[in-house]
Length: 351
Image (cartoon, rainbow, N blue to C red; front, top):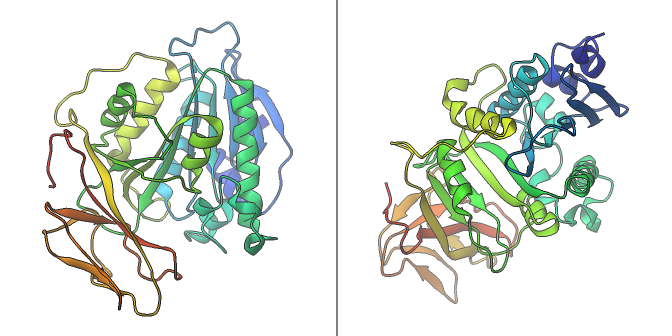
């Protein structure tokens, strides 16, 4: 019996099995590829994969890759499904332990961002808050945290996590990564090179700890983690996966333990942004002067009023600032958006 049958039964691949069992619980199962690689299905949409113990792991690393934390962000899901199919079909050999995660299967089936609550706000223990009690997405966040903890404990080498997304909102910078805030740390140069290899030219340094999946793995598991935005939201089967070849090829190279290539034009410079101001909804007198349909990384000139209430206002400072993640439809006290600018020394202005 083939490894594919052992893992996926009558389903053709990992994705189809995950979608067909989105609201079910599957027993843990384990199989081995002919070369000795072990593949364990830990839960629906969660595969723990390890090369044979005697195989060299030249980069001494373990890698978590997640996609589908928002169910309608389908292209990265299809990329991961393609990579696991290549591995099972013997097209290449695995050199390092890998945990692959399809985050929110029910939302994937529904073609929705989430079912009841945004899964990517439930990590780092946030799933335990009283307002989320009994919600399926809270239980899923807890399940994914535990899978990552077990993987990290079993693989004490350097840990990396890439949480892959696509966006509904347009962006002047199609591909960009977010680096979760951990006090005192800086981005390793080899991770900047990996992002460029994946055709991601923009990095935003986050300014405080959060409850996203990558924040959890950064703060609790001490992983080098990134949330990676890779393009536009489209339904399953409607993605031009050629536009995602950068992340596919970069991940495959890492999984195989091959050396990092030298950055090549046009992807040879990473522009780094930092947060200048976090916009919060201050209450009923809050007025946000940014259009609802504005693209991420839209630039505003010095002196532009971004928001105001009866007591204060915020104007762009001495140099241009850009908006990311604008969303005025949030409760009082929640984030409406971030204003950012290129970090001093990053060597590039806005596009």
